[in-house]
Image (cartoon, rainbow, N blue to C red; front, side, top):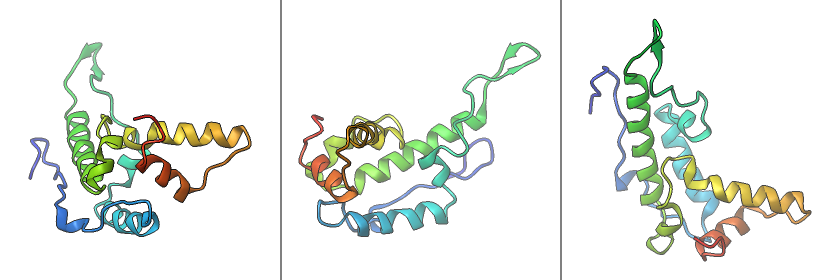
Length: 138
């Protein structure tokens, strides 16, 4: 699909992510997703480098439309859909509240940082298990 700004949006399908995230396969699931995002040069959407463009930049002190922002949002939503689709059905509700690809794991990251600060760090695999079992309260 071509965006009106002339940039190409990358969409995903289920065959690209045949392995769904479960408590038992986090490293393998991660190894499945990251190369696809890196291969399409999309990791910046996941780690926010570069950050999202301004929705309404100014030119000569007047607000103008930003097609880079619109493209960025469209691509981010396609990535978010891929992340949601790559989780097992019983866990989709844990990431379905997210409004962006980064939001899908942002609250979880904050929780783990708070626990580590209190002297109770959580391993990645334990975190996935807690999230998938709804311990985070979502």
